[in-house]
Structure formats: C-alpha cells, structure tokens
Image (cartoon, rainbow, N blue to C red; front, side, top):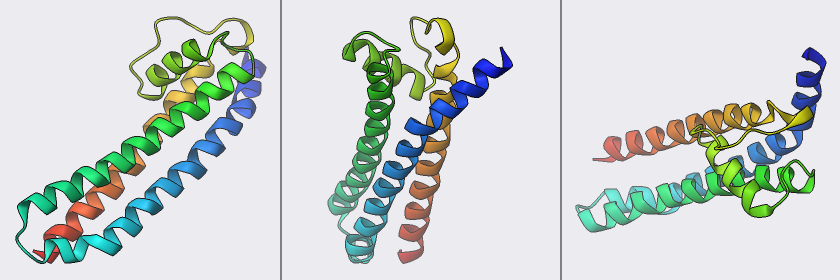
Amino acid sequence: MEFEYADQLLAALIPLGLTVIFHGLGMDVVRRTYKRFGSSLFSNQHIGLRAFFMITIVAIMLATHFFGVVIWAGFYFLAGILASAQDAMLYSMLSYTTIGAPHELRGHWIGFGGFEAMTGMLMFGWSTAVLAAVVQKIHAIE
C-alpha cells in the first residue's frame, strides 16, 4: 500500500505542477490589476468603484481556482481514472474544495483525490494571503 501512494504522489505531480503554475499566473493577474487600478481607485472616495474593484479581484481568484479544478478533472479523464468528463469535473470540484466527492476512486487510484484536496487547500491559502495583502494595501492608502 505504501508504494501505491508513492506512485500516486508521483502521478499527482503532473496536475499539481500545472495547478501551481496557472495559480501563480492568476495571482500575478491580481497583482498587476491592483498595481494598475488599486491605488488610484482607493485614493478617492468612490464606494462603487471600490466594490467593483474587489469583486474583480475575487472573480479573478475564482476563475483561477476553477481552472485548477479543470486541470485535475482533465487528468482524471485523460488518465482513464473517471469515465466521463462530467464525472471528472464533479469529482474534481468536490475534491479540490475539500467538500468530498460522492463516490470513491477505484483500484490503484483510491486515495488520489486526497492529493487534489491538499493542493486545493494550499491554493486557497495562497489566494487568501494575496487577498489579505490587497486589503492591507487598500487600508494603508486610506
């Protein structure tokens, strides 16, 4: 059983690596968006613009996380772990968000969803840190 998880960890490096790369790109979009618009929006008192800016930042983060789910779902489907793209997306969405999938993976892949859940938790932590930094900078401007 130990070797089975070692093999799963090695296989998980593919979607994990892609998730980290694309998450980093998404967080860079957040950084560039803040750099371009953040300080000018928050130096004045436009509440509506502030709200729109924060919604934009969170939407970028949400899209970034969704793309992480798609990466893992693609792996499940292309590796033949799950038979349909729809099942792969559902399983991935529930694993990435750590809600827990309604069914288990079978055979050699039985614990693989745990690696996605660990990755998802780390990516949510990363997003939370970036969001906290944006909010902190906004309060420093005020």
